[in-house]
Image 1 (cartoon, rainbow, N blue to C red):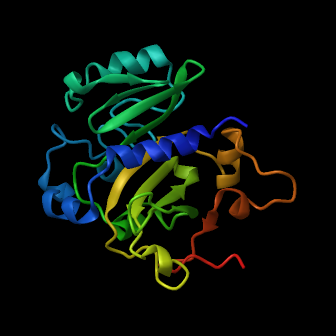
Image 2 (cartoon, rainbow, N blue to C red; image 1 turned 180 degrees about the horizontal axis):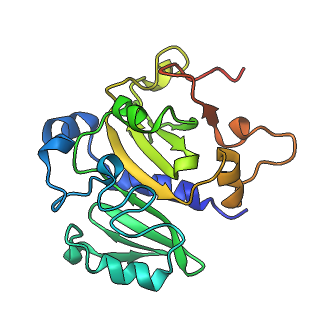
Length: 223
């Protein structure tokens, strides 16, 4: 089975946002403290465009047009641009392509945005995927807003041994990474579009670890 492009995107976000949550909290300004000419704030301000558009680049756009636009965006460090498989990346983000079109845009926010602020803006997420860290005692949480075409990444606040007893997230969980993709009615539609469909009679939860959001709560036991 082809490795999920969506999961590649989520792993790429982790690489881009390799800083610890504590490091981010001490160095990042709030969205009100940054200039839209220096930092992308579209997730919050919808300027210069609203998600899933990023700086004029949207999922589904022709690859050639997206590359041309990317070369003109002032906040992209042109010296760090590099091709990575089917993606064009820079020091804080990537635009990935499939079949000649933009598949997703992923980036690390340059300002501090907390999970509750995200919920205030877009409502509660549909669900999430919890992934244990390779070299960390905690993992990462990928929260999905499929109808808005948005995934955000936060660090789990629960240690690996406590994920079934301690809340994984909190209102002040800081967003470490963001991904935009073409909106889908449900998470199942999103994974199916990515050719990552569970076998018949196997719930998405059991197949990819997708869990319906139930507030700031521990990971439900699957036993």
